[in-house]
Length: 292
Image (cartoon, rainbow, N blue to C red; front, side, top):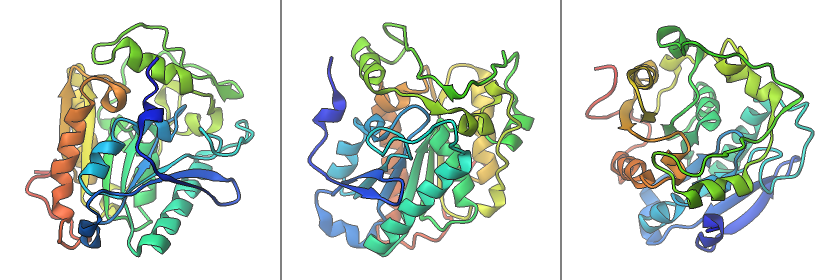
């Protein structure tokens, strides 16, 4: 099996806060450009950790972006916790703490890039915490988006004390090779049922409410699209927060990060990030938003 996590460039590591959150820091190549650039903070999804960004990180380092990858409490190399007690709000506090660490170290708030559960966490945090920008990659949807573009024919599942790791029994997917899936299978772990039940409509949740008008930073929504309902939800998410939007047809949820077409998402993010080169990061300026 090819372990992409072990192929990442050399980087710094440290533990943050009373829950010993494992934080990985990837310093940029060509660091002279960093004087005008905010750092990036990558927030993983449920069952995963910073290892899920293994294919992404080298591209951003090469393009001159300093990158931080957080591991929420109990995930990957963060200290083990009792997952039966962890709440959605606990994960919010983890990200808030790491943003404070980044601001203290870099003197500026980061651009937050959140995947799946990390996306809904990042949206909620962006209502009240200053960040330079927000990128959502196949984010879990909020209550308001579900009201506009609901999931149909859900088979509700009752969570146990914890949610077990996805089995990933398939050998390949439409955009993932056997190696891509084996890599995930090695690292996927259990998740907090209480945190998952707060936002997952598959578990009968009412969803997390997001006040889109309170998210003032520039934003980008990228979604895996396989049918018109996926497209409807993706565009609804972008409209809700006034974001630019990219739907990638024929891709999968995890494939956007570790699959064979992950570079398409990376390329779009790079184009979007160009606005931060030498320009004020507080302006919500873009040539096109999903509201238009």
